[in-house]
Length: 151
Picture 1: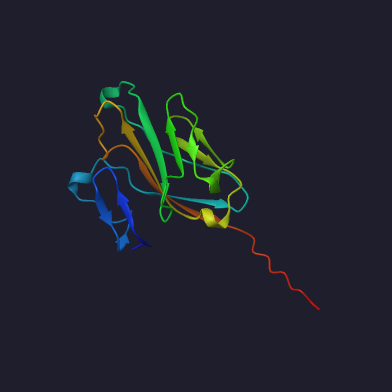
Picture 2: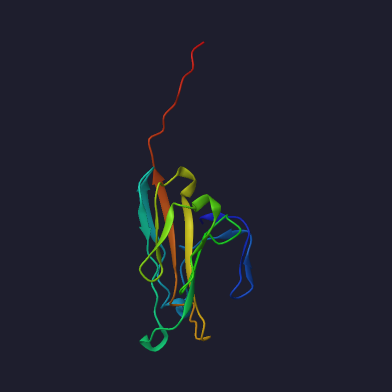
């Protein structure tokens, strides 16, 4: 098991309050859902977090891409065609869209470590949440410096 906390999945109004584990085994109904990914990055570096978009029938449809970080109440990044992205203030100037739905996180901090979820909502109502979106765990490796003050 991985993560504790409280969050609500707005798409289904389901709540996972005690323990949520994106790496848990999926049942047969989730066979098409992408498996969670694990990424690592060095403190201060950049890393792309990928998100796959599968258009219904293979034809482009307007959509909204939402990135959430487990433990952060509001989405950290929202992208809608033709509009500037909305981002959480703690990521301002450090996050940008890459491709259709992926993001690049730069100047990585130790606090960036954790689970990220990308979800794609198609505006024509044809969403299939079982095939769009991604869970990624980001591990941040860094140089820990201890400063000793001598009086």
